[in-house]
Amino acid sequence: MTATSPPTHALEDAYHYRLIARALERIDTAQAEGRALSLAELAGELGLSQAHFQRLFSTWVGVSPKRYQQYLSLGLVRDLLARQVPLEAVADHAGLSGSGRLHDLVLRWEAMTPGEFARGGAGLTIHWGLFPSPFGPALAMATERGLCGLAFTAETGVEAAHADLAARWPGARFVEAPESIRPWVEAALSGRGEAAMLMIGAPFQIKVWEALLQIPTGHVTTYSALAEAIGHPRAVRAVGTAVGRNPLSFLIPCHRALRKSGGLGGYHWGLPVKRAMLGWEAARVEAVAPAARPGPLFAAETEPPLSAR
Image 1 (cartoon, rainbow, N blue to C red):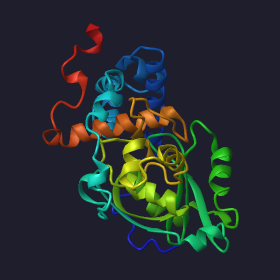
Image 2: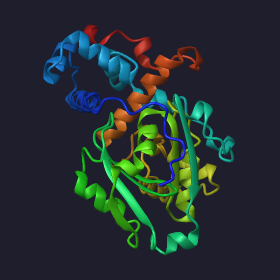
Image 3: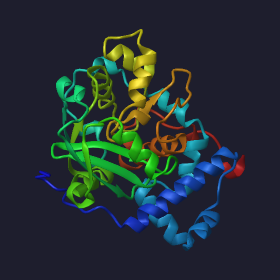
Image 4: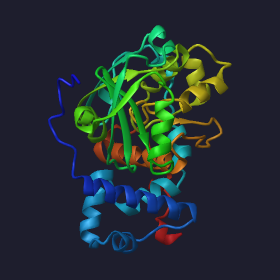
């Protein structure tokens, strides 16, 4: 493994990641039931004091638990769609730093050649491991050239997620070796340092994934806009399939692709994970750079608080 520039900051305490993942899961479940959880309820379920939980949640998500629930309940998807990125204007942009990434993550990437893809990963050794993340356990896979798979297993389970990724490269040899890929995974999940990626897919899929990489954090696009951006405006269904086959979830942000109608669409690793990612990113953008927002970001800024409704 040649991760030559490991992140300067190690991944934060895995225990805290697990706590935040549990908190986001409970919030999502409550949202589906049409209710919000109080700070006391959330802290109590996690076995923490209210003050400790509030500080921990705000550190990781960027806003308080109450504010985060407002993001999800007050038209998150509608408001994100209002900030849709005109991908046709940026599809040829090659840079991945700056506004497109949150914090200090530098991504390097290359695409496997069509010939390598046709061989189904034959001759490749792919190292894999399980890592904590704010969105539940993450299953990561990498070759010596970079991360090639990142899945979130809270909804599917580890075995199913591993089988799903491994089936994409049937000729490869898989070795459990988390320490050998840890620097790239830590950079990817903490948003600091440098991570390398190797896109393993068909040429059409890679074009779609490249377009997804142009979507800045805290923004979204639609499947039809993606089709326009890659020069295939009538291939919306094929684009949706390619989005769903993205093996590098979160890094290649397929969760930022929504239906034109405002629906979330599908998500390969479960819609609760997609909702959590969208809310988490939007909240962090709000907290990090509120002055840079193009007008009111969320209806929560003009509607009464949850307690008054």
